[in-house]
Length: 172
Image 1 (cartoon, rainbow, N blue to C red):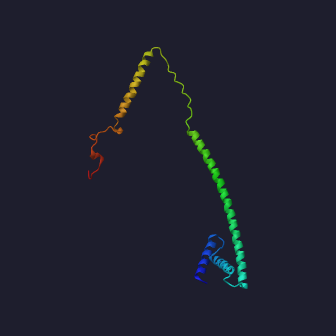
Image 2: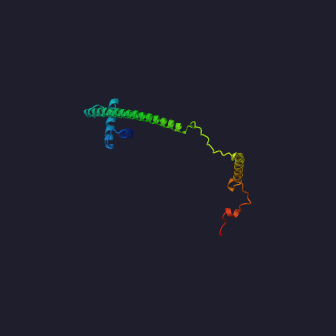
Image 3: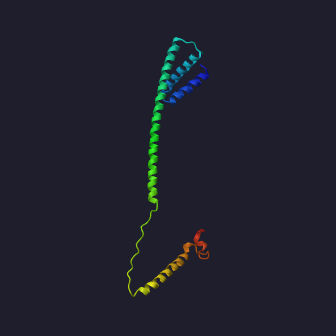
């Protein structure tokens, strides 16, 4: 047997193992040798003998068995792919339904108008009510001015904070 034949047998045996056609490495080697012998016999490189005929019959049986296994595995994979496709379609439909629900929840709907609060009206307080809106307008302006001068808002000068308080230089 030549080196090329041994390489072919090893490659074929590995393929048989990868596809799950043979259970062990020894079985794969035997099947690969039988298949290679069959190919050699078909090409006319070897003379046919009774032993070769038996070997070729075994090779035919093994190829038929391999073809059967390949066909069954292909059918199984097709069935599984169809299942996965159906599951993906149902998941997509569920995701779309969830998206629509979220959009409907987040969508700002028309708010019902708030009825105005009735204020108790006193006859003598008519003048006081006219003065109150003016004082209420002044209060928000004062609050805005107070907020603007807040030190966290960035209205701080470099002279206001010493650098020694910000950085630690050693033993103190």
